[in-house]
Length: 149
Ligand code: RB5
View 1 (cartoon, rainbow, N blue to C red):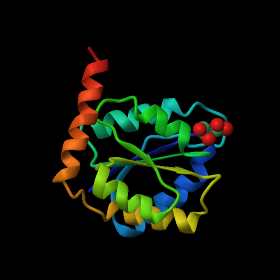
View 2: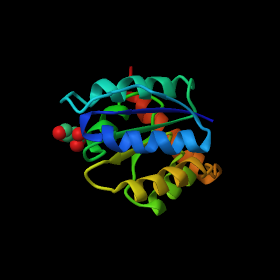
View 3: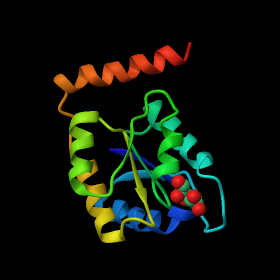
View 4: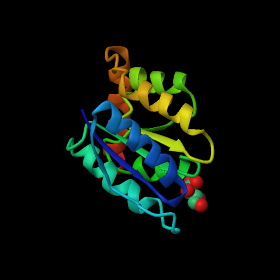
């Protein structure tokens, strides 16, 4: 499984913890930045990760900012992206099974590293259930088409 990761300055420390976990577990991943705590703009890091996931160059993405909100809003502007903010493992599980979320977003100022790693593990190890959920995802794609004319 190939994973794209990115963050702004508000998420860079948690991203480093997640990268250590991904390395330990042998996941293939690319860090799209940022690499410092210097103030930057989260859309600049959401965009390349979201585009790489939407293009299927990566199977899943992980994006982190202070809250996980801004970076997720930005990622969800890319057609084909279903970015889900999760602060608990139930949501991480449910959003893979039901929404086929392809990007997990996390808030470094919201969750501690221990919980964040559990959320990442859950997200990466849960499969989409398909069936009745697929038609709902197809309807999301229809909304994208309607506004991309
Ligand atoms: C940066 O201070 C902060 O606004 C950003 O990381 C994020 O929380 C935005 O949603």
